Length: 331
Image 1: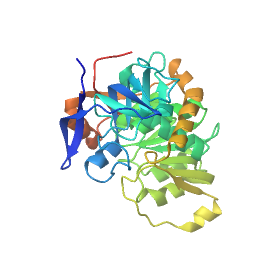
Image 2 (image 1 turned 120 degrees about the vertical axis):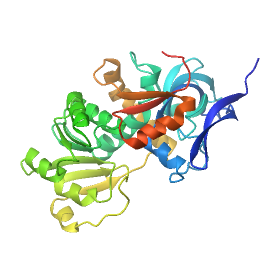
Image 3 (image 1 turned 45 degrees about the vertical axis):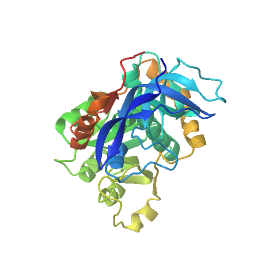
Image 4 (image 1 turned 135 degrees about the vertical axis):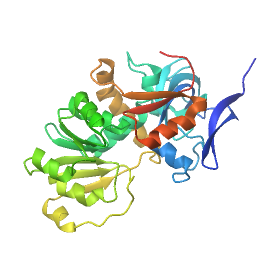
């Protein structure tokens, strides 16, 4: 008996609601993935609140990263086939039994990584690689400052920067989170609830500052970040949890030759994302397969408990990633 509908989570009046939707059909360069697990991310929260609408043509169902098995392929796809286990970065649709993905944004699930863990890979790893290594050009022995070190992005940045021989300083909101970051590989961790991170970084770097900053906070962090930056340092803004506006002094930017940049990932074109996927496959996937780095999973929820997963993320009590387990299939 053919099944034509699937479970999905839709947004209704700022809340998450379990519903039924038609199973989508892949276009030429897409694949249909039977979802095993989906990552929960801050943009999902923003979308639920009406602050981050899906791009034109994207599914209105939340969910930007998934893992599972390919159920069907578009006519132009020859390198993937039904039954292949993959994880994928998607522009939406992850909170469902089935999800469409651009084939070039799919990556094989690394050896030794479960489908639950694989769902934690795409959003954080694409984001960190694109911003820390491609945009900010972090080099060997440079120092990276990561705000929100215990987040999914933060735990990924710590491990990747360490794997590529950088030094890492993080900020986090509790002693427990700081200790976790240190155990994961950070060289120093600053509890921003108890210490001024500008003063602490000055001490840790002998007043030299850091070379790269990965910031998700924005707002009043911007002028403070500038004080933490070394000569020729790069600041990459990837979110603005404290707001989009700040007053800054342009003089240190000129005197220290600073670069202030930023990006968002969801609206970038397919070619850009495919390029990141290939770099990850070549340079990072072997590190996952040999166990040198591993996604950090805090909690898992069933699909119909997606609202509870959002509550946990908004509480900021988690360390690492929050995952929705959609089906019981695993690799």
